[in-house]
Length: 151
Length: 303
Image 1 (tube, each protein chain N blue to C red):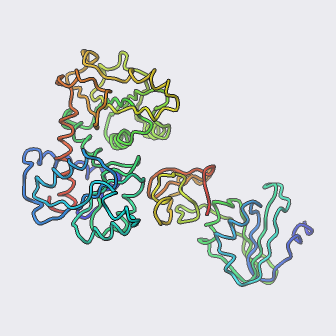
Image 2 (image 1 turned 30 degrees about the vertical axis):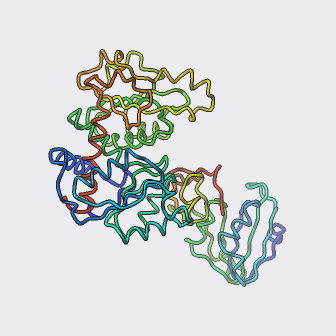
Image 3 (image 1 turned 120 degrees about the vertical axis):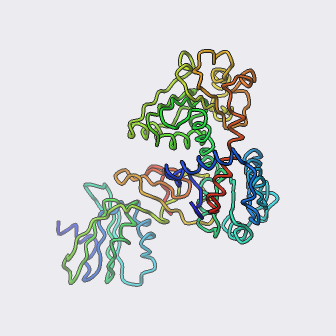
């Protein structure tokens, strides 16, 4: 257990995002805008996980996230777990929840949708939270997780 | 309904729909009234649709309004690369209402978000065509006396036909409605609509042909089967004649039964049906004018 934790070194204060599917790590980085944060960030990827096969872990020093922000990664990392760290101690554990509405993040799967033709931010109602399915605010078509494209 | 957009049939409640149908009946009695005098209505057809455009323009002209606009995208600034948002924002400055037809799905919704005047969707790709649905409802109510207790036969392309999908959603709000779906295997009603009906406890039946069922119908709603919808052209050739309605098939139909079609018709209703008193599709097109008069005047707050 102790050995696993040390695959990515501990942080004093900040946020640890664990159980990110390894192949979605860079999507999570994009969605949370981590490339714009100037605090120390460490990543580990292709780590062994009994649940996910290969997982990634992200540790961001001195940054804490609002639930609203963190739920934006639900589409790509539905099983992610967050730990808020203060002075090396976990002070708060959170799990990601699929929000009712999604703005941006995913592309509408309908090639004839206006969001794929005009410069307009896609918006969705979440039609199914378990097997994520998004109903486009514009063309009303459903995009399921199999056909979901994240940008 | 004043100043509201009409993008999707789901934008109107059952009460809103009842009000539109009442108003349409008033306009049918008195179709030429000068209530739109001084109003300018933009008719933006990003793809040609002569029937729908003329129906709207007739509705507006009979009410004394003026129409500006274009009949296809090549004659507008879209051909110079202007975005839909910019076109709509600009035209909204020139007009009291925008009626738009566009080949891309969701375009009317986007237009409604940027327009300072009400937007009426006259068809956005395969998505919605709510004024067609309202005129279909008006035609059913007028011929059956009510939208309750109707056995509705939907025939032809039930997979891609947006008029069929919108009509199904709208009719599901009424009491004791039964749906019969008659289509080739490849063009069956999508499962999401069957699930929707099942959830609401509304009975439906699927058939591959008309045999022995026409006598149960109150409304037969025909649609065109397009060759390009078939992945296998042989399949099209084999099935196309099974979905053609002929006069002799209507021998045992109920007295109240009427045949509807959103038009244009190609060959799916044989011309020998046209003289049958049960053929209603051309009157249905006329009803479109009254229904659109009702929609425009109610959104502009004139009725």
